Figure (tube, helix red, strand yellow):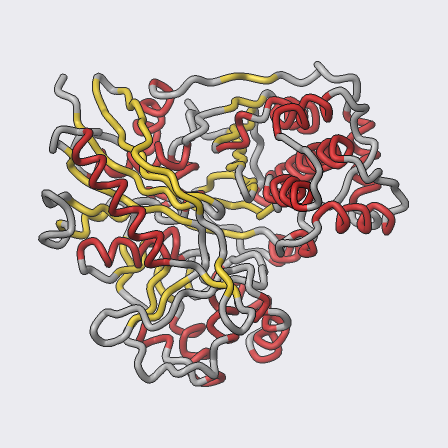
Length: 495
């Protein structure tokens, strides 16, 4: 079988890369053509932004290298990124300013402002979205006093990158579902929500939102001269979690997933959204996936808490490296200190270890000023959050699961994977580490006719393309009673 080539531009919250995928005999092999940092940049007024133009330059470089590495046989490219952030384009298609970064604090207090005129239960019944202060709807309202007269369209980050490649402005469905502006049951923009933003805040949302497209839509060829040869641009699962879930190497539908990286996205794949009052009160989100699916999930802070802790220690002159840190953490007693990994205080950059110690004191626990103890606290707490989230998702959706799949970089953290098996009492299948890129490539390959079938057919290719490790519960010396007690300490009054 002749090999076929596709390129995935995968922009995560802290780094980006372009991955060349070679599909041959029903199996993908992946190779990185470029990797680059992706951190927030400071504005002159203290605001936080994304260097979208700089990221696109890296993406162009990586795709050109993919064209060269494929011997000119590259068929298509697709872009996935984090959610919610957007760029404003003028009439000539120019980016009017660097997009705000979701960690910017301009949305502080905005959800409460919005809910005063658009009740939270009304918004959830349409958008089904977990309330996070950086959701696009709140970012738009935070920017209500900006000059909107020059804005012709608003593009979310992956759609902006695709637009710069092929000139077609769209909103891919999975990334659009992170905005709060969608009717997730109908998979259309919500006219009532958009009209409310226009009447209440003067925001021209109905005018500036682009055409919605489903993942797998071929947008067109790259602009002449952008690369050494034109390739097709495919709208993939533009939200990186949608691409990651597309790659889950599952043989059946009875699974829970953890897309583990800077963020942990924990939940289920469903056929319909769950828009009940109980779901809203539990703060679950209904984001859209490939093939008409819903990713019913909750955001947990993820390994950002650990990476920001390491950054803080290094800035203070402490010699801390990840591998020996994880080894030292594994040697410590488990569940000594457990905390709520959904606490919004863990969102912004800063002295993460100090925040964790403060949270520990608030819950009557003690967390030593020690990197290994802090690392163990973070990993125990993440596993506890996964347990809590999966149990609640199953109850709210009326589902049962028999396995947990962890994809993304966190699947390489053996301690976290084993802790997740212990906490949930379920086998954990870890891999693929490059799940987001693989899901991106799978959707492209199907769009270009290289793979036939539904999402389960894509997952058979994912299984063939992945080296998987299974973790079973019962290895570590604490069971369900210890995890239940830990949950009461981490979530006092809410366990």
